[in-house]
Image (cartoon, rainbow, N blue to C red; front, side, top):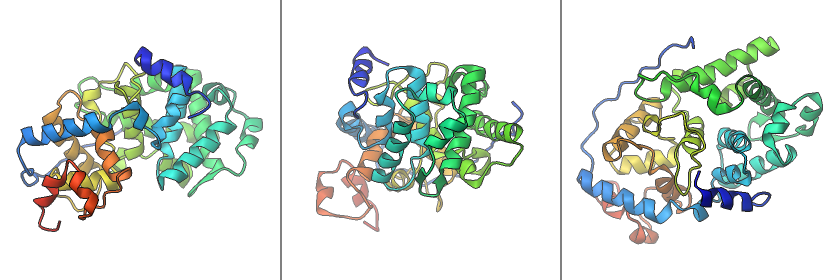
Length: 317
């Protein structure tokens, strides 16, 4: 993380291997609207416009920069990412409440997590995830810190260097944590915990875990770059309804559902533009869906959007 970004993050403190391989085949989609150069130019415009530190809020990434120590940043980021579903304001509220109950150092809270600490989380709820789900997750994070020292070191053990993307490593990581849960507690993980630790082996696009990886691995004005052991070229686009809608407008896929295969297909399309950094444009592009509230239909504010010409080429626009 750059010195400037690190100092800014500190100034904001208190204010702001036995897993089955996942194989995904992606059918050929229709040719993208416009040339590759045209699309690349538009993406660069969006990147310049939106990919700025001061525009992070209300994105849950903001919680990473409440802390200065990398281990605190990754714990806060992991919790913020897995809870990043539902309405933006509700996510902000839930993550803020959770981290406030964990004190000034999330990593120390996790390392010392016990029944007494569990009481502090009593009554916490985010949509259908309960305090018990979060406590079960914190027990797993405690095991990670005790055995590996950091989430990064644990995740790195899941990586096979010859794999072209992060999917199988993510599956080993998520699946391994659920196995740990069973070994530690003697019980099968709850539905809520399994939702927090979605596994790509089940066909899920794993938007929230891929979002966490982007925050940790990439390094620019927005993403922290505190992880050094993962190649950003192997990351997968975090796909939600906003990203799926915009990428469909751009002609990056033709599937009817949002799945792991969809995320792979979209990532491959972005890799044609930026082979070494296929998720580079994720934050900037998602601002159109989240901040500008794009719904894929024409409205007067569309006249100021960089994607307008692409939208006009669609018959349904």
